[in-house]
Image (tube, each protein chain N blue to C red):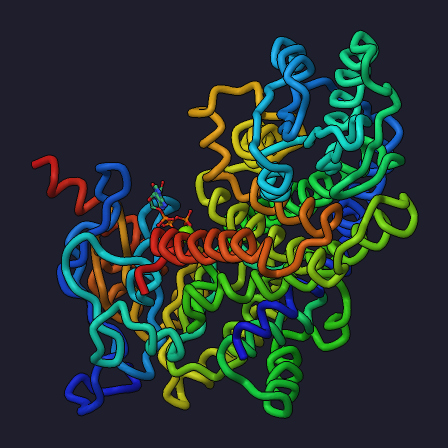
Length: 340
Length: 254
Ligand SMILES: Nc1ncnc2c1ncn2[C@@H]1O[C@H](COP(=O)(O)OP(=O)(O)OP(=O)(O)O)[C@@H](O)[C@H]1O
Ligand SMILES: [Mg+2]
Protein backbone atom coordinates (compact mmCIF):
# COMPACT_ATOMS: atom_id res chain seq x y z
CA UNK A 1 0.00 0.00 0.00
CA UNK A 2 2.59 2.56 1.08
CA UNK A 3 5.07 1.08 -1.35
CA UNK A 4 2.64 1.38 -4.22
CA UNK A 5 1.78 4.94 -3.18
CA UNK A 6 5.45 5.82 -3.33
CA UNK A 7 5.97 4.03 -6.63
CA UNK A 8 2.95 5.81 -8.10
CA UNK A 9 4.23 9.15 -6.91
CA UNK A 10 7.61 8.60 -8.54
CA UNK A 11 5.90 7.71 -11.80
CA UNK A 12 3.69 10.79 -11.64
CA UNK A 13 6.72 12.97 -11.04
CA UNK A 14 8.49 11.39 -13.95
CA UNK A 15 5.69 11.83 -16.40
CA UNK A 16 5.62 15.55 -15.63
CA UNK A 17 9.35 15.89 -16.14
CA UNK A 18 9.83 15.76 -19.92
CA UNK A 19 13.51 16.56 -19.92
CA UNK A 20 14.33 13.73 -17.58
CA UNK A 21 12.19 11.33 -19.58
CA UNK A 22 14.13 12.36 -22.65
CA UNK A 23 17.42 11.78 -20.87
CA UNK A 24 16.29 8.33 -19.87
CA UNK A 25 14.81 7.24 -23.18
CA UNK A 26 16.33 9.27 -26.00
CA UNK A 27 19.88 9.91 -24.84
CA UNK A 28 20.95 6.24 -24.81
CA UNK A 29 19.61 5.73 -28.33
CA UNK A 30 21.40 8.82 -29.52
CA UNK A 31 24.73 7.82 -28.03
CA UNK A 32 24.41 4.22 -29.24
CA UNK A 33 23.79 5.47 -32.75
CA UNK A 34 26.83 7.73 -32.57
CA UNK A 35 28.95 4.87 -31.26
CA UNK A 36 27.89 2.68 -34.14
CA UNK A 37 29.26 5.22 -36.58
CA UNK A 38 32.42 5.88 -34.67
CA UNK A 39 33.56 2.51 -33.44
CA UNK A 40 36.69 0.93 -34.76
CA UNK A 41 38.47 -2.23 -33.65
CA UNK A 42 41.84 -2.38 -31.96
CA UNK A 43 44.59 -4.96 -32.18
CA UNK A 44 45.39 -7.58 -29.60
CA UNK A 45 47.66 -10.58 -29.40
CA UNK A 46 45.36 -13.54 -29.87
CA UNK A 47 45.42 -16.91 -28.10
CA UNK A 48 45.55 -19.65 -30.70
CA UNK A 49 45.24 -23.32 -29.98
CA UNK A 50 46.89 -25.72 -32.43
CA UNK A 51 46.45 -29.43 -32.88
CA UNK A 52 47.61 -32.08 -35.32
CA UNK A 53 49.98 -29.70 -37.09
CA UNK A 54 53.24 -30.22 -39.02
CA UNK A 55 56.22 -29.47 -36.76
CA UNK A 56 57.73 -26.78 -38.99
CA UNK A 57 54.56 -24.74 -39.00
CA UNK A 58 54.17 -25.11 -35.25
CA UNK A 59 57.63 -23.73 -34.74
CA UNK A 60 57.00 -20.76 -36.95
CA UNK A 61 53.73 -19.97 -35.21
CA UNK A 62 55.35 -20.17 -31.80
CA UNK A 63 57.84 -17.51 -32.76
CA UNK A 64 55.08 -15.12 -33.86
CA UNK A 65 53.13 -12.50 -31.86
CA UNK A 66 50.40 -14.88 -30.91
CA UNK A 67 50.17 -16.95 -27.72
CA UNK A 68 50.21 -20.46 -29.07
CA UNK A 69 49.06 -23.50 -27.15
CA UNK A 70 49.54 -27.01 -28.42
CA UNK A 71 46.87 -29.66 -27.92
CA UNK A 72 47.20 -33.35 -28.55
CA UNK A 73 43.80 -33.57 -30.22
CA UNK A 74 41.55 -31.22 -32.08
CA UNK A 75 38.64 -32.04 -29.77
CA UNK A 76 40.53 -30.86 -26.72
CA UNK A 77 41.40 -27.60 -28.44
CA UNK A 78 37.80 -27.06 -29.51
CA UNK A 79 36.61 -27.66 -25.96
CA UNK A 80 38.90 -24.90 -24.72
CA UNK A 81 37.71 -22.63 -27.51
CA UNK A 82 34.14 -23.15 -26.35
CA UNK A 83 35.10 -22.32 -22.81
CA UNK A 84 36.47 -19.02 -24.03
CA UNK A 85 40.11 -19.79 -23.19
CA UNK A 86 41.17 -19.46 -26.82
CA UNK A 87 40.46 -17.02 -29.60
CA UNK A 88 40.99 -19.53 -32.41
CA UNK A 89 41.92 -23.14 -33.15
CA UNK A 90 44.18 -23.97 -36.05
CA UNK A 91 44.64 -27.38 -37.58
CA UNK A 92 45.60 -28.89 -40.89
CA UNK A 93 43.08 -31.03 -42.72
CA UNK A 94 44.19 -32.96 -45.79
CA UNK A 95 47.05 -30.52 -46.24
CA UNK A 96 44.78 -27.45 -45.99
CA UNK A 97 45.01 -25.20 -42.95
CA UNK A 98 41.68 -24.72 -41.31
CA UNK A 99 40.89 -22.21 -38.62
CA UNK A 100 37.93 -21.96 -36.28
CA UNK A 101 37.48 -18.54 -34.76
CA UNK A 102 35.72 -17.92 -31.46
CA UNK A 103 34.11 -15.03 -33.30
CA UNK A 104 32.65 -12.84 -30.55
CA UNK A 105 35.09 -10.02 -31.05
CA UNK A 106 35.64 -8.88 -34.63
CA UNK A 107 38.91 -7.12 -33.84
CA UNK A 108 40.33 -10.35 -32.47
CA UNK A 109 39.06 -12.24 -35.53
CA UNK A 110 40.86 -9.80 -37.76
CA UNK A 111 44.06 -10.02 -35.78
CA UNK A 112 44.08 -13.82 -35.93
CA UNK A 113 43.40 -13.96 -39.65
CA UNK A 114 46.03 -11.37 -40.50
CA UNK A 115 48.65 -13.15 -38.45
CA UNK A 116 47.97 -16.54 -39.99
CA UNK A 117 47.89 -15.23 -43.51
CA UNK A 118 51.32 -13.67 -43.06
CA UNK A 119 52.81 -16.85 -41.69
CA UNK A 120 51.19 -19.16 -44.20
CA UNK A 121 52.33 -17.05 -47.12
CA UNK A 122 55.95 -17.80 -46.16
CA UNK A 123 55.16 -21.45 -45.77
CA UNK A 124 55.08 -22.65 -49.36
CA UNK A 125 54.60 -26.37 -48.97
CA UNK A 126 51.05 -25.88 -47.77
CA UNK A 127 48.08 -24.81 -49.77
CA UNK A 128 47.70 -21.23 -48.62
CA UNK A 129 43.97 -20.90 -48.96
CA UNK A 130 42.75 -20.90 -45.41
CA UNK A 131 39.47 -22.55 -44.47
CA UNK A 132 37.80 -20.23 -41.96
CA UNK A 133 34.87 -21.10 -39.76
CA UNK A 134 33.29 -19.36 -36.79
CA UNK A 135 32.18 -20.76 -33.49
CA UNK A 136 30.04 -17.67 -32.83
CA UNK A 137 29.20 -14.68 -34.96
CA UNK A 138 30.25 -14.51 -38.61
CA UNK A 139 32.67 -12.83 -40.96
CA UNK A 140 30.40 -9.84 -41.48
CA UNK A 141 30.13 -9.05 -37.78
CA UNK A 142 31.37 -5.50 -37.20
CA UNK A 143 33.20 -4.15 -34.17
CA UNK A 144 30.07 -2.46 -33.04
CA UNK A 145 28.22 -5.75 -32.88
CA UNK A 146 30.68 -6.90 -30.29
CA UNK A 147 30.78 -3.70 -28.24
CA UNK A 148 27.09 -3.10 -28.66
CA UNK A 149 25.90 -5.48 -25.94
CA UNK A 150 28.34 -3.88 -23.51
CA UNK A 151 27.18 -0.42 -24.48
CA UNK A 152 23.54 -1.34 -24.00
CA UNK A 153 24.34 -2.51 -20.51
CA UNK A 154 26.42 0.55 -19.88
CA UNK A 155 23.69 2.99 -20.81
CA UNK A 156 21.03 1.20 -18.82
CA UNK A 157 23.35 1.48 -15.91
CA UNK A 158 24.62 5.00 -16.40
CA UNK A 159 21.38 6.87 -16.92
CA UNK A 160 19.46 5.05 -14.22
CA UNK A 161 22.33 5.62 -11.79
CA UNK A 162 22.31 9.33 -12.49
CA UNK A 163 18.54 9.74 -12.27
CA UNK A 164 18.10 7.65 -9.17
CA UNK A 165 20.94 9.43 -7.45
CA UNK A 166 19.61 12.86 -8.26
CA UNK A 167 15.98 12.07 -7.38
CA UNK A 168 16.87 10.60 -4.04
CA UNK A 169 19.16 13.50 -3.31
CA UNK A 170 16.36 15.92 -4.12
CA UNK A 171 14.08 14.04 -1.81
CA UNK A 172 16.62 14.79 0.90
CA UNK A 173 17.54 18.39 0.07
CA UNK A 174 13.95 19.51 -0.56
CA UNK A 175 12.95 18.34 2.90
CA UNK A 176 10.48 15.80 1.56
CA UNK A 177 12.55 12.93 2.92
CA UNK A 178 12.26 14.35 6.41
CA UNK A 179 8.55 14.87 5.81
CA UNK A 180 8.27 11.33 4.49
CA UNK A 181 10.01 10.01 7.58
CA UNK A 182 7.48 11.84 9.76
CA UNK A 183 4.84 9.51 8.31
CA UNK A 184 4.51 5.85 9.32
CA UNK A 185 6.38 4.64 6.23
CA UNK A 186 9.10 2.14 7.04
CA UNK A 187 12.62 2.59 5.78
CA UNK A 188 12.55 -0.52 3.66
CA UNK A 189 9.24 0.59 2.16
CA UNK A 190 10.95 3.73 0.91
CA UNK A 191 13.69 1.71 -0.73
CA UNK A 192 11.28 -0.82 -2.24
CA UNK A 193 8.96 1.98 -3.39
CA UNK A 194 11.84 3.63 -5.18
CA UNK A 195 12.79 0.32 -6.75
CA UNK A 196 9.25 -0.24 -7.97
CA UNK A 197 8.66 3.29 -9.24
CA UNK A 198 11.95 3.51 -11.07
CA UNK A 199 11.83 -0.13 -12.05
CA UNK A 200 8.89 0.56 -14.34
CA UNK A 201 10.83 3.22 -16.20
CA UNK A 202 13.98 1.14 -16.18
CA UNK A 203 12.06 -1.70 -17.82
CA UNK A 204 10.62 0.66 -20.43
CA UNK A 205 14.07 2.02 -21.09
CA UNK A 206 15.56 -1.45 -21.38
CA UNK A 207 12.87 -2.49 -23.84
CA UNK A 208 13.36 0.60 -25.93
CA UNK A 209 17.14 0.28 -26.05
CA UNK A 210 16.98 -3.41 -26.87
CA UNK A 211 14.42 -2.96 -29.63
CA UNK A 212 16.28 -0.01 -31.12
CA UNK A 213 19.64 -1.79 -31.06
CA UNK A 214 18.38 -4.94 -32.68
CA UNK A 215 15.76 -3.61 -35.08
CA UNK A 216 17.06 -0.17 -36.05
CA UNK A 217 20.82 -0.37 -35.54
CA UNK A 218 20.72 -3.97 -36.76
CA UNK A 219 23.06 -5.19 -34.06
CA UNK A 220 24.14 -8.82 -34.16
CA UNK A 221 21.72 -10.77 -31.99
CA UNK A 222 21.19 -14.51 -31.85
CA UNK A 223 19.89 -14.93 -28.31
CA UNK A 224 16.59 -14.41 -26.59
CA UNK A 225 15.33 -10.85 -26.32
CA UNK A 226 13.60 -11.79 -23.06
CA UNK A 227 16.94 -12.67 -21.50
CA UNK A 228 18.38 -9.45 -22.83
CA UNK A 229 15.63 -7.47 -21.10
CA UNK A 230 16.10 -9.42 -17.93
CA UNK A 231 19.81 -8.59 -17.74
CA UNK A 232 19.14 -4.98 -18.63
CA UNK A 233 16.55 -4.73 -15.90
CA UNK A 234 18.88 -6.31 -13.36
CA UNK A 235 21.60 -3.87 -14.35
CA UNK A 236 19.16 -1.00 -13.97
CA UNK A 237 18.14 -2.22 -10.52
CA UNK A 238 21.77 -2.37 -9.50
CA UNK A 239 22.32 1.14 -10.83
CA UNK A 240 19.21 2.32 -9.02
CA UNK A 241 20.19 0.95 -5.66
CA UNK A 242 23.79 2.07 -6.06
CA UNK A 243 22.70 5.54 -7.17
CA UNK A 244 20.38 6.06 -4.22
CA UNK A 245 22.98 4.66 -1.85
CA UNK A 246 25.74 6.97 -3.07
CA UNK A 247 23.39 9.95 -3.04
CA UNK A 248 23.47 9.72 0.76
CA UNK A 249 27.09 10.77 0.50
CA UNK A 250 26.38 13.75 -1.72
CA UNK A 251 24.83 17.03 -0.74
CA UNK A 252 24.31 18.62 -4.14
CA UNK A 253 23.47 17.47 -7.64
CA UNK A 254 26.97 18.45 -8.65
CA UNK A 255 28.41 16.04 -6.14
CA UNK A 256 26.40 13.27 -7.77
CA UNK A 257 28.08 14.17 -11.04
CA UNK A 258 31.42 13.80 -9.25
CA UNK A 259 30.66 10.13 -8.72
CA UNK A 260 30.75 9.52 -12.46
CA UNK A 261 34.55 9.42 -12.83
CA UNK A 262 34.85 7.42 -9.63
CA UNK A 263 32.07 4.89 -10.04
CA UNK A 264 30.97 4.82 -13.66
CA UNK A 265 34.08 5.34 -15.76
CA UNK A 266 36.17 2.57 -14.16
CA UNK A 267 33.28 0.17 -14.73
CA UNK A 268 33.27 1.10 -18.39
CA UNK A 269 36.97 0.21 -18.60
CA UNK A 270 36.52 -3.12 -16.92
CA UNK A 271 33.29 -4.18 -18.56
CA UNK A 272 34.83 -5.37 -21.80
CA UNK A 273 34.59 -2.23 -23.89
CA UNK A 274 38.37 -2.45 -23.99
CA UNK A 275 40.37 -5.60 -24.16
CA UNK A 276 41.81 -6.36 -20.76
CA UNK A 277 44.19 -9.12 -21.83
CA UNK A 278 47.21 -6.83 -21.76
CA UNK A 279 46.46 -5.83 -18.19
CA UNK A 280 48.14 -7.22 -15.13
CA UNK A 281 46.03 -10.27 -14.13
CA UNK A 282 45.95 -9.01 -10.58
CA UNK A 283 44.40 -5.76 -11.76
CA UNK A 284 41.98 -7.68 -13.96
CA UNK A 285 40.50 -9.15 -10.78
CA UNK A 286 39.11 -5.71 -9.95
CA UNK A 287 36.42 -6.38 -12.53
CA UNK A 288 34.98 -8.94 -10.10
CA UNK A 289 33.56 -6.21 -7.92
CA UNK A 290 32.06 -4.25 -10.79
CA UNK A 291 28.38 -4.87 -11.51
CA UNK A 292 28.76 -3.73 -15.09
CA UNK A 293 31.31 -6.45 -15.76
CA UNK A 294 28.69 -9.13 -15.05
CA UNK A 295 25.98 -7.34 -16.96
CA UNK A 296 28.22 -6.86 -19.99
CA UNK A 297 29.40 -10.45 -19.87
CA UNK A 298 25.83 -11.73 -19.83
CA UNK A 299 24.66 -9.33 -22.56
CA UNK A 300 27.52 -10.39 -24.82
CA UNK A 301 26.83 -14.02 -24.14
CA UNK A 302 23.15 -13.66 -24.96
CA UNK A 303 23.45 -11.47 -28.03
CA UNK A 304 26.51 -12.95 -29.72
CA UNK A 305 26.69 -16.51 -28.48
CA UNK A 306 22.98 -17.06 -27.94
CA UNK A 307 23.64 -18.23 -24.40
CA UNK A 308 20.90 -19.62 -22.21
CA UNK A 309 20.25 -19.38 -18.49
CA UNK A 310 22.81 -22.09 -17.78
CA UNK A 311 25.56 -19.90 -19.20
CA UNK A 312 24.72 -16.45 -17.88
CA UNK A 313 22.70 -17.44 -14.81
CA UNK A 314 25.65 -16.77 -12.53
CA UNK A 315 25.93 -13.21 -13.88
CA UNK A 316 22.22 -12.68 -13.22
CA UNK A 317 22.51 -13.93 -9.66
CA UNK A 318 25.54 -11.75 -9.02
CA UNK A 319 23.64 -8.68 -10.26
CA UNK A 320 20.69 -9.62 -8.09
CA UNK A 321 23.09 -9.97 -5.19
CA UNK A 322 24.55 -6.53 -5.82
CA UNK A 323 21.05 -5.02 -5.91
CA UNK A 324 20.04 -6.73 -2.70
CA UNK A 325 23.24 -5.64 -0.99
CA UNK A 326 22.92 -2.02 -2.09
CA UNK A 327 19.22 -1.95 -1.17
CA UNK A 328 20.02 -3.26 2.28
CA UNK A 329 22.76 -0.68 2.72
CA UNK A 330 20.22 1.94 1.64
CA UNK A 331 17.84 0.87 4.36
CA UNK A 332 20.70 1.12 6.83
CA UNK A 333 21.84 4.50 5.47
CA UNK A 334 18.33 5.84 6.07
CA UNK A 335 18.90 5.23 9.76
CA UNK A 336 20.94 8.40 9.69
CA UNK A 337 17.62 10.22 9.25
CA UNK A 338 15.35 8.08 11.38
CA UNK A 339 16.25 5.25 13.70
CA UNK A 340 13.02 3.33 13.24
CA UNK B 1 -8.44 28.92 31.16
CA UNK B 2 -7.02 25.49 30.26
CA UNK B 3 -9.53 23.23 28.61
CA UNK B 4 -8.27 20.03 30.24
CA UNK B 5 -7.63 19.79 33.98
CA UNK B 6 -4.17 18.62 35.00
CA UNK B 7 -5.49 15.73 37.05
CA UNK B 8 -7.02 14.19 33.92
CA UNK B 9 -6.72 10.40 33.81
CA UNK B 10 -5.63 10.51 30.15
CA UNK B 11 -1.89 10.28 29.61
CA UNK B 12 -0.44 13.65 28.58
CA UNK B 13 -0.05 14.18 24.86
CA UNK B 14 3.61 15.09 25.30
CA UNK B 15 6.02 14.66 28.15
CA UNK B 16 9.59 15.84 27.76
CA UNK B 17 11.96 15.03 30.57
CA UNK B 18 15.34 16.79 30.69
CA UNK B 19 15.69 16.62 26.93
CA UNK B 20 18.99 17.77 25.46
CA UNK B 21 19.99 17.99 21.83
CA UNK B 22 23.24 19.28 20.37
CA UNK B 23 24.48 19.79 16.86
CA UNK B 24 28.22 19.89 16.24
CA UNK B 25 28.98 20.19 19.96
CA UNK B 26 26.63 23.15 20.32
CA UNK B 27 23.81 22.57 22.74
CA UNK B 28 20.65 23.70 21.01
CA UNK B 29 18.07 22.29 23.40
CA UNK B 30 19.29 22.35 26.97
CA UNK B 31 17.65 20.09 29.57
CA UNK B 32 14.09 20.98 28.68
CA UNK B 33 11.16 19.43 30.53
CA UNK B 34 7.56 19.99 29.51
CA UNK B 35 4.15 18.38 29.77
CA UNK B 36 1.40 19.12 27.27
CA UNK B 37 -2.04 17.73 28.16
CA UNK B 38 -4.41 16.25 25.63
CA UNK B 39 -6.68 18.78 23.98
CA UNK B 40 -4.33 21.62 24.76
CA UNK B 41 -3.33 24.23 22.19
CA UNK B 42 0.27 24.90 23.11
CA UNK B 43 2.27 27.70 21.51
CA UNK B 44 6.05 27.94 21.25
CA UNK B 45 7.36 31.43 21.01
CA UNK B 46 10.97 32.49 20.66
CA UNK B 47 13.50 34.32 18.55
CA UNK B 48 14.87 32.86 15.36
CA UNK B 49 17.44 30.18 16.12
CA UNK B 50 16.23 29.67 19.69
CA UNK B 51 15.45 26.01 19.02
CA UNK B 52 11.69 25.91 18.38
CA UNK B 53 11.91 23.69 15.34
CA UNK B 54 14.43 21.43 17.02
CA UNK B 55 12.20 21.12 20.06
CA UNK B 56 9.00 20.20 18.23
CA UNK B 57 10.87 17.60 16.21
CA UNK B 58 11.93 16.06 19.51
CA UNK B 59 8.34 16.18 20.74
CA UNK B 60 7.11 14.39 17.63
CA UNK B 61 9.88 11.82 17.81
CA UNK B 62 11.11 12.79 14.35
CA UNK B 63 14.43 13.65 15.91
CA UNK B 64 16.07 11.85 18.77
CA UNK B 65 17.38 13.52 21.92
CA UNK B 66 20.99 13.08 22.98
CA UNK B 67 19.81 12.65 26.54
CA UNK B 68 16.53 12.80 28.41
CA UNK B 69 13.32 11.13 27.31
CA UNK B 70 10.23 12.01 25.32
CA UNK B 71 6.80 10.38 25.63
CA UNK B 72 3.80 10.80 23.37
CA UNK B 73 0.43 9.67 24.77
CA UNK B 74 2.36 7.74 27.38
CA UNK B 75 4.51 5.88 24.85
CA UNK B 76 8.26 6.24 24.93
CA UNK B 77 9.64 7.74 21.72
CA UNK B 78 10.79 6.98 19.14
CA UNK B 79 8.18 4.43 18.17
CA UNK B 80 6.92 3.70 14.69
CA UNK B 81 3.25 3.35 15.69
CA UNK B 82 3.28 6.86 17.13
CA UNK B 83 3.99 8.27 13.68
CA UNK B 84 0.34 7.50 12.90
CA UNK B 85 -0.81 9.61 15.78
CA UNK B 86 0.38 13.06 14.77
CA UNK B 87 0.14 15.31 11.76
CA UNK B 88 3.25 17.30 10.99
CA UNK B 89 3.71 20.52 9.13
CA UNK B 90 7.37 21.34 8.62
CA UNK B 91 8.68 24.88 8.64
CA UNK B 92 9.75 24.59 5.01
CA UNK B 93 7.16 23.16 2.69
CA UNK B 94 8.08 19.63 1.84
CA UNK B 95 6.00 19.16 -1.27
CA UNK B 96 6.51 17.48 -4.61
CA UNK B 97 6.63 20.36 -7.06
CA UNK B 98 5.99 18.25 -10.16
CA UNK B 99 2.74 16.92 -8.75
CA UNK B 100 -0.61 18.60 -8.40
CA UNK B 101 -1.95 19.56 -4.98
CA UNK B 102 -4.34 16.64 -5.12
CA UNK B 103 -1.59 14.16 -6.01
CA UNK B 104 0.49 15.43 -3.10
CA UNK B 105 -2.41 14.99 -0.73
CA UNK B 106 -3.28 11.57 -2.10
CA UNK B 107 0.32 10.44 -1.71
CA UNK B 108 0.60 11.46 1.93
CA UNK B 109 -2.92 10.22 2.68
CA UNK B 110 -2.03 6.78 1.41
CA UNK B 111 1.09 6.73 3.57
CA UNK B 112 -1.26 7.08 6.53
CA UNK B 113 -3.29 4.20 5.23
CA UNK B 114 -6.33 6.12 4.01
CA UNK B 115 -8.33 4.07 1.53
CA UNK B 116 -9.93 5.29 -1.67
CA UNK B 117 -13.35 6.60 -0.62
CA UNK B 118 -12.17 8.00 2.71
CA UNK B 119 -9.10 9.46 1.04
CA UNK B 120 -11.16 11.28 -1.54
CA UNK B 121 -13.47 12.69 1.09
CA UNK B 122 -10.62 13.78 3.38
CA UNK B 123 -8.82 15.51 0.52
CA UNK B 124 -11.95 17.53 -0.21
CA UNK B 125 -12.50 18.37 3.46
CA UNK B 126 -8.94 19.41 4.19
CA UNK B 127 -8.69 21.41 0.97
CA UNK B 128 -11.91 23.25 1.79
CA UNK B 129 -10.59 24.10 5.21
CA UNK B 130 -7.52 25.86 3.80
CA UNK B 131 -9.43 27.25 0.85
CA UNK B 132 -7.53 25.36 -1.83
CA UNK B 133 -10.34 23.40 -3.46
CA UNK B 134 -10.22 25.23 -6.77
CA UNK B 135 -6.43 24.90 -7.07
CA UNK B 136 -6.18 21.22 -6.26
CA UNK B 137 -5.49 20.14 -9.81
CA UNK B 138 -2.78 22.72 -10.38
CA UNK B 139 0.85 21.69 -10.29
CA UNK B 140 2.41 22.74 -6.97
CA UNK B 141 5.28 24.44 -8.80
CA UNK B 142 2.68 26.98 -9.89
CA UNK B 143 1.46 27.64 -6.34
CA UNK B 144 2.20 30.84 -4.45
CA UNK B 145 4.09 30.66 -1.16
CA UNK B 146 0.91 30.95 0.87
CA UNK B 147 -0.81 28.28 -1.20
CA UNK B 148 2.05 25.89 -0.54
CA UNK B 149 1.79 26.64 3.17
CA UNK B 150 -1.93 25.89 3.07
CA UNK B 151 -1.36 22.67 1.18
CA UNK B 152 1.18 21.58 3.81
CA UNK B 153 -1.37 22.35 6.51
CA UNK B 154 -4.07 20.42 4.69
CA UNK B 155 -1.74 17.43 4.45
CA UNK B 156 -1.07 17.57 8.18
CA UNK B 157 -4.80 17.61 8.94
CA UNK B 158 -5.82 14.99 6.43
CA UNK B 159 -5.59 11.83 8.51
CA UNK B 160 -7.34 13.46 11.49
CA UNK B 161 -4.49 12.90 13.95
CA UNK B 162 -4.96 13.29 17.67
CA UNK B 163 -1.85 15.49 17.80
CA UNK B 164 -0.95 18.27 15.41
CA UNK B 165 2.60 19.56 15.28
CA UNK B 166 2.70 22.73 13.23
CA UNK B 167 5.88 24.69 12.61
CA UNK B 168 4.92 28.27 11.79
CA UNK B 169 1.75 27.24 9.98
CA UNK B 170 0.49 30.68 9.07
CA UNK B 171 3.59 32.29 7.55
CA UNK B 172 2.65 33.87 4.24
CA UNK B 173 -1.06 33.42 4.79
CA UNK B 174 -3.31 36.48 4.58
CA UNK B 175 -5.04 37.78 7.75
CA UNK B 176 -8.53 36.66 6.75
CA UNK B 177 -7.50 33.11 6.00
CA UNK B 178 -5.23 33.11 9.02
CA UNK B 179 -8.15 33.93 11.25
CA UNK B 180 -10.25 31.14 9.80
CA UNK B 181 -7.37 28.70 10.20
CA UNK B 182 -7.03 29.65 13.85
CA UNK B 183 -10.76 29.21 14.32
CA UNK B 184 -10.37 25.73 12.92
CA UNK B 185 -7.41 24.98 15.21
CA UNK B 186 -9.44 26.17 18.22
CA UNK B 187 -12.36 24.00 17.26
CA UNK B 188 -10.09 20.98 16.73
CA UNK B 189 -8.62 21.58 20.19
CA UNK B 190 -12.13 21.82 21.62
CA UNK B 191 -12.84 18.38 20.12
CA UNK B 192 -9.80 16.98 21.93
CA UNK B 193 -7.00 17.34 19.37
CA UNK B 194 -3.74 18.39 20.95
CA UNK B 195 -2.02 21.11 18.97
CA UNK B 196 1.55 22.30 19.25
CA UNK B 197 2.34 25.30 17.18
CA UNK B 198 5.36 27.56 16.79
CA UNK B 199 4.83 31.16 15.87
CA UNK B 200 6.35 34.59 15.61
CA UNK B 201 2.98 36.31 15.50
CA UNK B 202 2.00 37.75 18.87
CA UNK B 203 -1.73 37.89 18.32
CA UNK B 204 -1.61 34.20 17.45
CA UNK B 205 0.27 33.53 20.66
CA UNK B 206 -2.57 35.04 22.63
CA UNK B 207 -4.94 32.45 21.16
CA UNK B 208 -3.02 29.55 22.70
CA UNK B 209 -4.06 27.82 25.92
CA UNK B 210 -0.50 27.92 27.14
CA UNK B 211 2.68 29.44 25.84
CA UNK B 212 6.26 28.32 26.13
CA UNK B 213 8.69 31.17 25.76
CA UNK B 214 11.98 29.78 24.55
CA UNK B 215 15.38 31.40 24.40
CA UNK B 216 18.70 29.78 23.57
CA UNK B 217 17.28 26.33 24.01
CA UNK B 218 15.63 26.86 27.39
CA UNK B 219 12.16 27.85 28.49
CA UNK B 220 12.19 31.21 30.16
CA UNK B 221 8.51 30.82 31.01
CA UNK B 222 5.68 28.36 30.43
CA UNK B 223 2.24 29.63 31.33
CA UNK B 224 -1.12 30.82 30.06
CA UNK B 225 -1.04 34.09 28.12
CA UNK B 226 -3.09 35.78 30.87
CA UNK B 227 -0.70 34.69 33.62
CA UNK B 228 2.32 35.79 31.59
CA UNK B 229 0.80 39.23 31.19
CA UNK B 230 -0.10 39.45 34.86
CA UNK B 231 3.28 38.16 36.01
CA UNK B 232 5.19 40.77 34.04
CA UNK B 233 2.64 43.52 34.33
CA UNK B 234 2.68 43.97 30.57
CA UNK B 235 -0.13 44.74 28.20
CA UNK B 236 1.03 42.49 25.35
CA UNK B 237 2.77 39.16 24.96
CA UNK B 238 5.51 40.90 23.06
CA UNK B 239 6.23 43.12 26.01
CA UNK B 240 6.03 40.19 28.40
CA UNK B 241 8.53 38.29 26.32
CA UNK B 242 11.00 41.16 26.32
CA UNK B 243 10.59 41.75 30.05
CA UNK B 244 11.15 38.07 30.81
CA UNK B 245 14.13 38.03 28.48
CA UNK B 246 15.87 40.95 30.14
CA UNK B 247 15.07 39.53 33.57
CA UNK B 248 16.77 36.31 32.62
CA UNK B 249 19.80 38.14 31.27
CA UNK B 250 19.97 40.29 34.35
CA UNK B 251 19.86 37.18 36.48
CA UNK B 252 22.67 35.65 34.50
CA UNK B 253 24.92 38.68 34.81
CA UNK B 254 24.43 39.43 38.47
N1 LIG C 1 20.47 19.77 11.53
C1 LIG C 1 21.14 20.76 12.15
N2 LIG C 1 22.49 20.78 12.10
C2 LIG C 1 23.19 21.75 12.72
N3 LIG C 1 22.63 22.75 13.40
C3 LIG C 1 21.29 22.79 13.49
C4 LIG C 1 20.48 21.81 12.85
N4 LIG C 1 19.18 22.09 13.10
C5 LIG C 1 19.19 23.22 13.83
N5 LIG C 1 20.44 23.63 14.07
C6 LIG C 1 20.82 24.81 14.85
O1 LIG C 1 20.00 24.85 15.99
C7 LIG C 1 19.62 26.16 16.28
C8 LIG C 1 18.13 26.23 16.46
O2 LIG C 1 17.52 25.95 15.23
P1 LIG C 1 15.95 25.86 15.06
O3 LIG C 1 15.67 25.55 13.65
O4 LIG C 1 15.42 24.94 16.08
O5 LIG C 1 15.55 27.35 15.40
P2 LIG C 1 14.09 27.99 15.38
O6 LIG C 1 13.81 28.46 16.75
O7 LIG C 1 13.12 27.07 14.77
O8 LIG C 1 14.35 29.25 14.46
P3 LIG C 1 13.33 29.91 13.38
O9 LIG C 1 12.39 30.75 14.15
O10 LIG C 1 14.25 30.75 12.56
O11 LIG C 1 12.71 28.83 12.65
C9 LIG C 1 20.15 27.04 15.19
O12 LIG C 1 21.29 27.72 15.66
C10 LIG C 1 20.55 26.08 14.09
O13 LIG C 1 21.70 26.55 13.46
MG1 LIG D 1 12.08 27.00 13.12
